[in-house]
Amino acid sequence: MTRLLAAIAIICSIGATVSAQDTAGSWKPTFTSRHMGWDVTCDAKTTGDLQEERCYIRYIDVYSPRPNFGVLFMFIEIKGGIPAVSLGREFETDLVATTLRVRPGWMRPEGLCAGGACSFTGATAVALIDAMRSGGTLETGFVDATGSEQLRQWASDGFDAAFTDLKREAAARGL
Figure 1 (tube, rainbow, N blue to C red):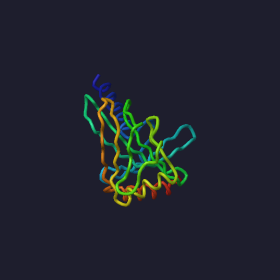
Figure 2: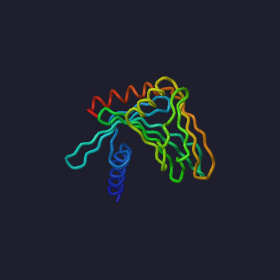
Figure 3: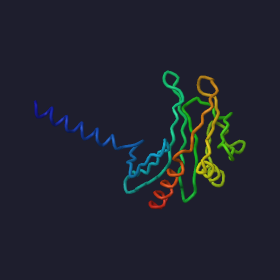
């Protein structure tokens, strides 16, 4: 019986180790760096014979604790050498009335965050990234799930270093 319990404990610890290294789904981190809240992650997964890789910057802002949990996040990826920016939120947060700007110098073009999603690529993404790399403060306003208006400001401290890491790691992986 003692050997059986020991075997179960070993199997559980191996499973815990594997799952602790796993990100969403079966993605496994291959690179991580942190720059003042701007996290850079590269990860990979294998599905059959297909190996997939991705690299991204992630910023997470928990603006309201439980029971009225609220989180806003930004992801920046480079796909085919072109940056893509996504601003996301928890379920039921209204981003239709969002203000999104980097002070000084950049403001979201009209209609970009319609329908509760805020994603852009190309020249718009490059302009936002350049404004953040220049030391601007990202400011976003929205209505949360409780109906309260929120105004969040994210300092760009560390963003330039994070974006430098993202570009280097994405290029090294051919992304």
